[in-house]
Image 1 (cartoon, one colour):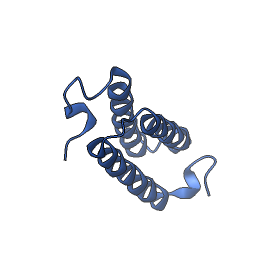
Image 2 (cartoon, rainbow, N blue to C red; image 1 turned 90 degrees about the vertical axis):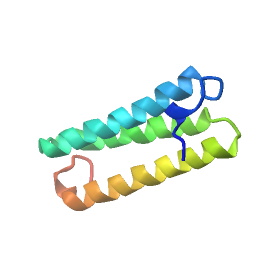
Image 3 (cartoon, rainbow, N blue to C red; image 1 turned 30 degrees about the vertical axis):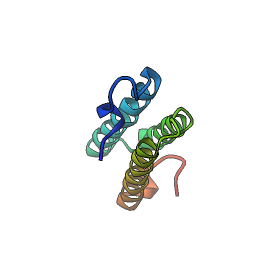
Image 4 (cartoon, helix red, strand yellow; image 1 turned 135 degrees about the horizontal axis):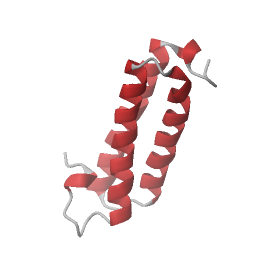
Length: 96
């Protein structure tokens, strides 16, 4: 499966490429926050990542490859949110 960053430049607009990179960057930030026990920043970062993913969906082309890639990315995002929530939901501001 190809990721948006792997698509030829003609297939991925600069905006979509920036959004897909930002989703990945926010995921890296979440890992860092959890490792540092910076739970007060996790909720905001989760919300920002969801917003970026929604924007990516809005800017997606109609092609099945891109739609499948975004669906897979959304699935991975939801799974990571589930894991984070199980790790320590009471520590996350605005959560549980």
